[in-house]
Image 1 (cartoon, helix red, strand yellow):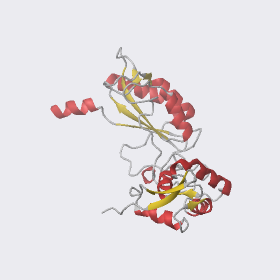
Image 2: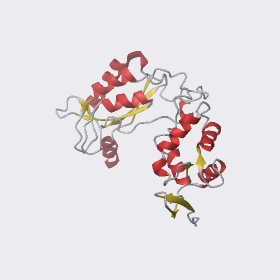
Image 3: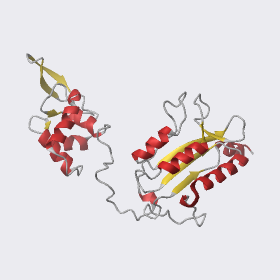
Image 4: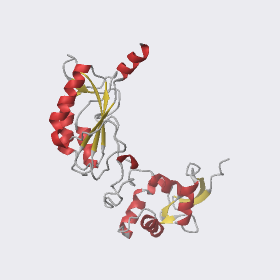
Length: 267
């Protein structure tokens, strides 16, 4: 059973007071516990409480009182007329909103990066080439560049034969998306891969190609990336190399085309 939403009183238009039910039932117990630990007796997280939370929990040790107040000011529209601080609902929305990113550039790399790559969460893109929706937008290298500049470490490319079947395009298959040439995407990845981070970039290829075009892609990839392309010495690695050992390297991840796997099942 979910708990009954709490009520709080707010001034409306400076002349009357009304009670509103807060839609806080979606906040999990851990978030509620944090909120109550860093709020006043009236159930409001003030700038001072918020700063303590950011320093002690999120390790933003250099944040100032002014920056903390700016965060609250930026979320007043979620606080239902509260001027002093944030209620539980607005605190919850802040935690999972765009203004509270999971990775803070100011923190920098502070973990042990010598373990196998599979031990880490990786900042991953999906359909990284789309400029808009997945049905009718343009495909371009511009979103790929923007993602790499933000520090994304995994770029996904869906590769298909072009209209003349003699080259390779990147597009969202079976849709109205307009294609972009694979080579253009690869060249942009090479140029921008390490502007935000020296750690490896993984290119995941969703392959829909014929064998002759697969060979063309293999040649395209090796010629574009050259020595920075990671080529394992064995087909059966016991464990992945570490991020530290893969700095400024490009890794290709792919699997047989779905069309090939489906045809194989029918045999």
